[in-house]
Length: 428
Image 1: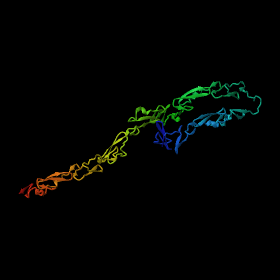
Image 2: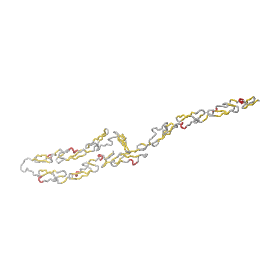
Image 3: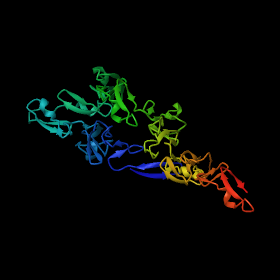
Image 4: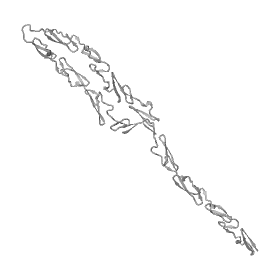
């Protein structure tokens, strides 16, 4: 999906085939089915198609087809639209599904005395054969005996009234009680001027209250809720995140404080979204992000995870927030007495000048340990050297030379000088 930045939030534009706040769900167009009134949902590429039951139309089968629009009823009949069909209320004298058949009133052979019956609309006419006197039938209809719009049919020695709907003969003077036959299967019958009307018991529908009503046909459950048809009602089983009789109420999941570690909770349609503080992740921001996963510490250092941070425990010889810097031990001038420091990883060496030794050139080499002064001379250590303090009568670097005190000719007046150790004597 493509993330669109919004003030203080964001919105995901999902690719075809995906849905959800973060495009995390595969879009299944037919789950739940968007088709109403029992239509069958067929999934197409990125969309759906509803195959409607007979009597319904529309993209979601939401519209009841009015079969009366095509005027299927003939002979001035009245069309009543029904779910998936229609009913024709025929005018007197007609019958059939479309009121297309003229009722043949001559089928009952109403004409006597060899009269010929001629069928007419909702009536018949007898053509009597010629005869002797007294062949004229008295027309009892001349007195208009039929009431309430009834049609009078003259008969031999009498008449017959064809009554309009809602009235019955002999004179159409009484309203017919259609309720006598108990036509309402699951309801109460009410007598009206045009016949009767069924007031259905809860949960039943139809002209005769014979069809159990399916309250789920109208898809009353919103937001993907599942409808269960009950007698005289329905029950909605709501998807997670919704409530109410028709699943119309979005539950504010943030009221239960599902987001951990001081995260900011955003209530969204049917769910919630946690905006995590830096350093946390997870649907409820309940997981501390391991900042050590990227191995930020260098040179063999140990990483210690923190909250949106980490710290490195450096091996000896390294420093820095990631132990990325090799420590230069020579900066502290560890080499004494003019020694030269050479830096290595986590170590150094001192190159000592002549006369010194030790790790840091801190020791003056005692040259007297390997050099000897002779003739009782005393060795005095120096820097990369030594001196011999000779006893009386000796001289030289090692006190090896005996001093001839006579060399200075100390004896006067031709006296003879005799050298001795550290002195002399004169023989005059």
